[in-house]
Length: 101
Image 1: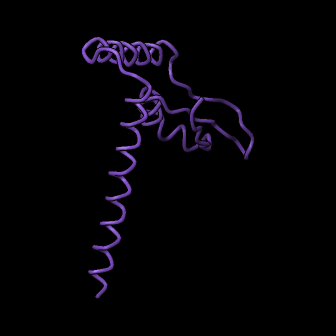
Image 2: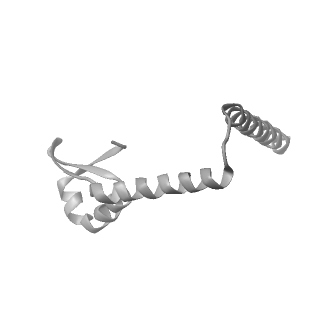
Image 3: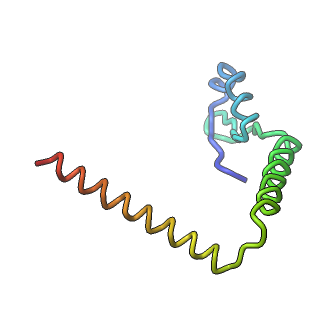
């Protein structure tokens, strides 16, 4: 289960439509009264499963289009992405340092 946010019962009553919208997006809330948990608002399980199924189908579709990928290719792509990220961070630090001068 993901992150759960605590919210007081009085606040939940006031903002129920917003809480329900957030629950539709997958968020979970613990409703408290005087600091004690009394209820939860959780996403409907079928909705979450539908999103999981949709993501899995997208992955399967990508695999069909891309063909077989070796472990070495996956590791190489990971390492290449890490090198790009490191270069970006180093360049951002240089720009920040130049702006200070």
